[in-house]
Length: 146
Ligand SMILES: CC(C)(COP(=O)(O)OP(=O)(O)OC[C@H]1O[C@@H](n2cnc3c(N)ncnc32)[C@H](O)[C@@H]1OP(=O)(O)O)[C@@H](O)C(=O)NCCC(=O)NCCS
Image (cartoon, rainbow, N blue to C red; front, side, top):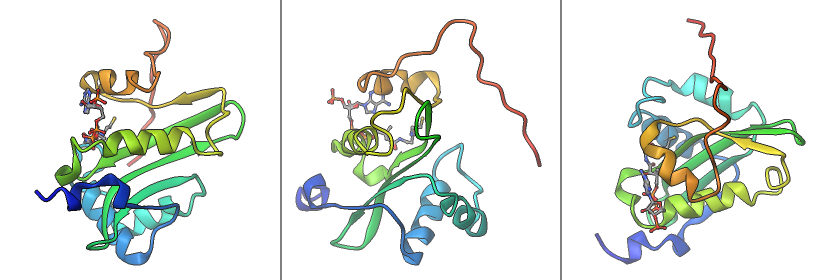
């Protein structure tokens, strides 16, 4: 691993994705348990939904190396989704850069409740950015289609 290719300062931040980066996002999604199986047509539709997206590209090889997205009502609630750092870039501080970028984004910084859901083993990671488990007795509920 060369230090040059793992220097997060060299990465370019993008708020939208070129077609080649969408292909890379679809590939990145195949590597995580909750995004595995997402197809390009649905991902393109998802990206058009209007919520802010956060992407870091390595200009050295035009590689999408980190991604997150959010949806917000602009006042009360923002949900943050799909926080992923490409495996080859993990442990470099890029996850922290991604979290800081998301949380300091003008669209999200003043929202009353910024929320996400995660497995138990990710709780310590999100606690670093001030997230806390919501109140006891509060359930995350889901109605699935298809
Ligand atoms: C979670 C993830 C985004 C972290 O990215 P990363 O680039 O490895 O994180 P960083 O190197 O920036 O680490 C930042 C800090 O978080 C800590 N950290 C990283 N992963 C952690 C984890 N799973 N649990 C607890 N702390 C973690 C690091 O030790 C570091 O701490 P420090 O600042 O005290 O040194 C990355 O591992 C990932 O993409 N995982 C797979 C996808 C995933 O599970 N996403 C979350 C879905 S809820």
